[in-house]
Image (cartoon, rainbow, N blue to C red; front, side, top):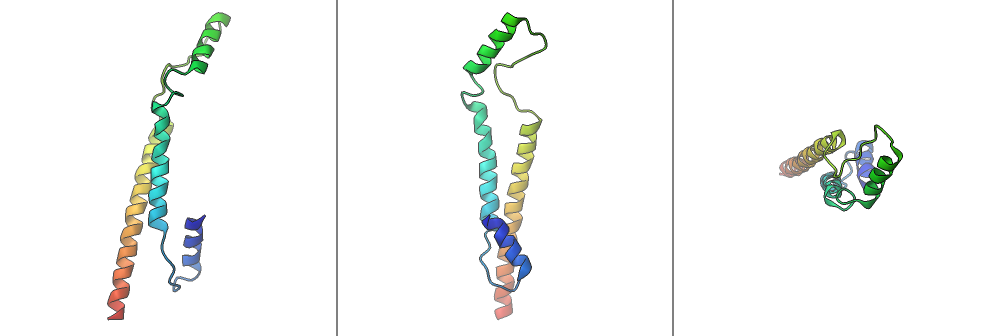
Length: 111
């Protein structure tokens, strides 16, 4: 919410001296996005009793075509998450470099 409010306020009145919080917000988004990979090392993906029960039920019922892997693996969604983490980091770097350049330009104008 703060990120969008800051982006909108900078577009409405760019001359207003407001604190820039885009870079920390992009960094937080990158951190929280990368935390989603913790699920791959949790009990949801390893030794899941629910999946074991589903496997035994499908074997008992003779259901054909249902395959439940024992562990989780990185699929298309995981690869897209890695790409988004890289893009969040690039947004963080470019935003922080832009703020530094903006402050430097303001200091040169004051002289």
